[in-house]
Image 1: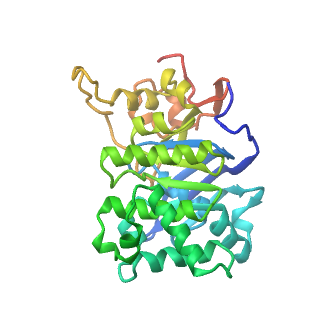
Image 2: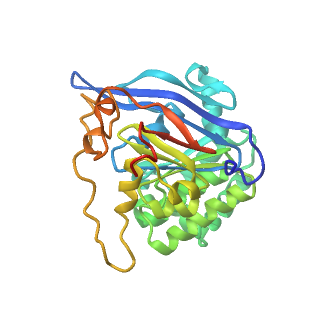
Image 3: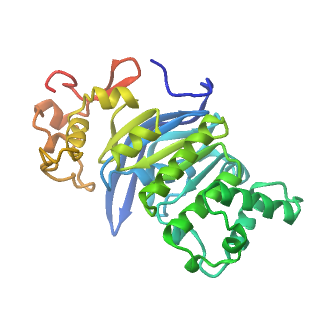
Length: 333
């Protein structure tokens, strides 16, 4: 079984290796990301799924090097096209964000400036990404095509509008169109369907998938929805409390989950029959200011042993391209 590179391109575009990030908040250090490792290849759809607060958005911000000022990098590397993002010069980092990776934020209202029209913001974003001598009419045409591609056909009216004149779903589609129009290699999608109704969400996910199939872009899709991840990705990383506990081809992980957290997470999905209503996962997420020295899921895991409490489990390959961080993966599930 191979990684999901629809276009057969296996060169790593992005690599995170043992990335650890903490946050200093009023004199206390919160150890949020603990040894995150993942790889994205060209033309690949990667999923990042887990409960709210598990570090998904912080992982995306670490990739773009846009973490807040109180963030501390405790170890690890982020490599984009073979270059260490945290060793890039200002110009190299600017080019990486301009042409390499772009992010669709979860809240479109905070991503758009309320005092400028969509046209002003869209054309400014395109000037940032395209050659500086590109004529304005070409920028406008490119923006209009991008808006139409995300189901906003009345592009002229949209361009003249201010963000407050658009619905949440329309603003989210504008943000997606900005990323698409720039022609970046990697899209970091932080729950892009949050503000959309289910029909428009489906259209947006289909659009993103088509971009991948056309070979124009790779995607990291962040979501807490297992359904979205299952339908929209070829490779998935299951996150819990700032760690990746399981990763593999999406079909394989959903068919044969091996980590106790993955099993518990999937058991929370409601059944179409209405039977066997989920009771959730017992316990609480650990305190990031005092995280366990071993497996971070150990306090909620019914299979936990003494070794789980004191020593972080290694990442083992239990099947081709199927990795689990658990001492007893497959033995007790």
